[in-house]
Length: 279
Image (cartoon, rainbow, N blue to C red; front, side, top):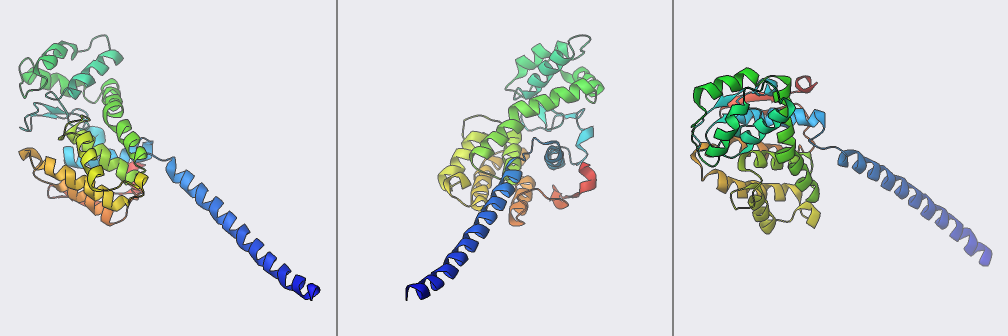
């Protein structure tokens, strides 16, 4: 009887052992896959190019972001001059930070140095006082130089891109979530008030659980975009919600890893971004 029992138990133990082994191998595989994706952020060169192109389609009506550093225009949104790769403005202070950074990188023969004081004076307004046509001309002259490109990229990293990654990682969001946070920071700024990024994020977290709180990412990101939409509609310059619709499109497509190619419309213009555009 005991011998028969042993003969029955041994196959069962072997089966359990095989199941445990393959489960272990599966777990190891999944951990490695998670580690690979978890290490990627929009600060990496490849994904930076993608989100730069996405934002440029909204800010400059072009995915050719490399040629947008010299851009300058008053788009009549109450923020004075809008300039550069992401639309730094004279009225919100980030254009001032760019020129200060440029001064650090190019302390000698900097034709923009004389505009630091006027930019400090017009911060918080839409005034062109002390700026005007001479500033527009000088900005365009140095806009595509290596030092100015570096200055703009440095301020993008410090004020917008790195904070977007930090908040997205805290909320356990994908690359898509990082991009959505980044775009919101670019448009609304990193402040704590209801109209700024942190106010929008807090509102979204009140209405939906982030993945860090066992929530569904698609539901949370749509809650974030819903909260952001209310803020966008308060400004005439942002009443066109193309950039929101594009981000909703990416959510609906399940493109959490920002896989290319991507096709979208922005303010009535059609765009396509493929691998060949970010090589």
